[in-house]
Image 1 (tube, one colour):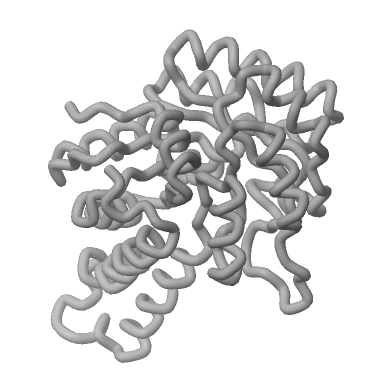
Image 2: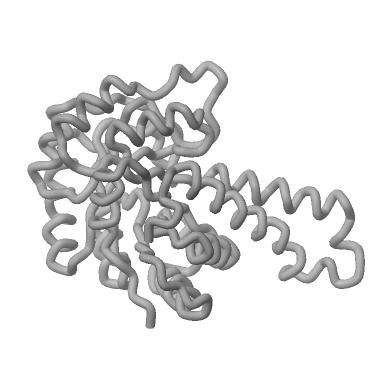
Amino acid sequence: MTKLVNPTAMLQKARKENYAIVHFNINNLEWIKAILKAVQETNSPVILGVSEGAIKYMGGVKTVYGLVTNLMDFIKVTVPVALHLDHGQTVESCIAAIDAGFSSVMFDGSHHPLAENLKLTAQVVDYAHRKNVAVEAEVGTIGGEEDGVIGTGELATLDECQAMKNLAVDFLAAGINNIHGPYPKNWDGLKLDLLKDISENISLPLVLHGGSGIDMEQIKQAISLGISKINVNTELQLEFQQATREYIIAEKDQTGKGYDPRKLLNPGTIAVENKAKQLLAEFGSLGKA
């Protein structure tokens, strides 16, 4: 069976060479197939991220692990693939993902006071590193909602980032005015000066959550300032929704066996694959496997 990889080395390489690994959130079988095909065809390393909500939807951590690894075998994937728990809310959920075979976990303690966040993150790091699993942590908060946790977008501080680095986390999500979901029209952009300060003082790969919809010029600036992993979910969901909507509006589901879910979901799946290829190119990880 094809093995998942710990993503730490791919992220360190990306940081050194000024590009970003794309973390694509996966939501179902079609999503996994589309992204694996995209990265294999473009020779790109990738992180497949899955939220606690998506894990529940897909039938648990063991089901997700089985879907990903078996599809990697079926598609004959040879590029590096990491399977990552996105926004793990408890130490227990991180341990469950690690025990199921995930190669990377994020413990999101950003909704706790800093001391509690550090304490719980340290527990995850201790368990994960004994199993050769990478750990992402978060300081500040990412605006918007992720699995019921609402962040108002508090900015990270250098002291918070240093405290996390001292715990030996492998990569760090620091709030720099980024948000989950579509960006509002009055959004005033990433705090690039803060990012520069953090990157220069904390020599860790940094993570940009809420990568969907940020102006590409800002994305490229962020990558040049140390962002090595960019999380994308909403952008692919919108591509999937639009392609599926067009299929139904055109009444293709009413023609022949167009109602067959394999046909009904195919336009959206193709749209996800094509958008994934575009983002891999734009973030610079094309051909970096």
